[in-house]
Image 1: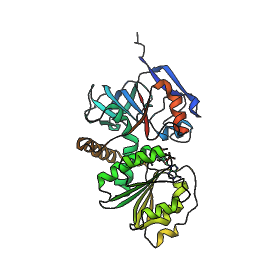
Image 2 (image 1 turned 45 degrees about the horizontal axis):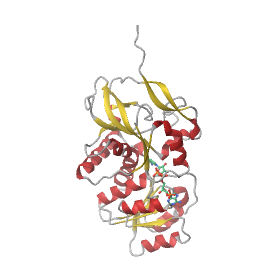
Image 3 (image 1 turned 90 degrees about the vertical axis):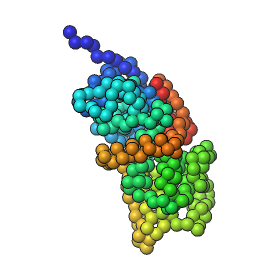
Length: 331
Ligand SMILES: NC(=O)c1ccc[n+]([C@@H]2O[C@H](COP(=O)([O-])OP(=O)(O)OC[C@H]3O[C@@H](n4cnc5c(N)ncnc54)[C@H](OP(=O)(O)O)[C@@H]3O)[C@@H](O)[C@H]2O)c1
């Protein structure tokens, strides 16, 4: 007689839609690792802004179907490994991005190559903040824009989870001057605390003047853009000679004048974490491991929720009322 499958708690997306489609289920089967797969008992789970897009059905529909758990990253302890797994054994501290199954769950299955060692200097909660924002920024600044020591940086959207990670990684790379933009006071203060030289309120009437003033005696070498639909026209006007505008996020379309790039030989590039190769992600993880060893990496945890409060957590994220930076589920 077959042993009945072990059951676990997970946050299941009943259909695509608003936060109300998230339902706690105690009847989800714990997956079994196949060859080259790792089963992780989750300790903390990332709540990413991109999870809202997935939930709404506008992104990664092949991976996230209704009836299954949501969630892309998180941290925990290896519970079991499949045949051929060489890098991990039960008991290892790890973080995941992405899971093969949704990470809003007690147990998550992941390919061995999507699992990374969690440095002992970082807690599980900090480990859950790492994957999406820090990998995203590593991709954008190191692998795409190739930010060099001594260059200046403008981060459009510096108080979000990606923006805060961007400040830290840019400092580590030796950026000489970092200016961020953000709206909420709490976020602007946090971005300053995280190491930005100046943070400007994008809602201020004289926002553009303040930005130009901040860079009056410096050219802008790199712009990391979280809201390209709103800012691209301005970015193209203010980017410096030989500068690079890296498109990390957008919500809609925009009208801009690429002619502004011509006389400055500036460029615009996209940066997508999903497009990085396995070996590029290994390089990112190695860099972040060394950063943890050196102690400069400081993942900011905004708010902690139990899995039972998934709907509330998403509502607060969508309404921008849940604070700034990355929130997590703690199990
Ligand atoms: N390319 C990739 O691989 C990748 C991976 C992950 C995420 N992303 C994308 O990256 C973007 C940022 O993610 P996140 O999680 O950090 O988002 P987030 O937490 O929502 O942060 C957004 C940031 O943008 C600021 N902001 C809003 N409107 C702005 C405007 N008009 N001008 C300047 N700043 C503005 C926000 O400030 P206030 O909160 O004060 O308004 C906040 O600092 C999202 O679009 C996300 O989808 C891309």
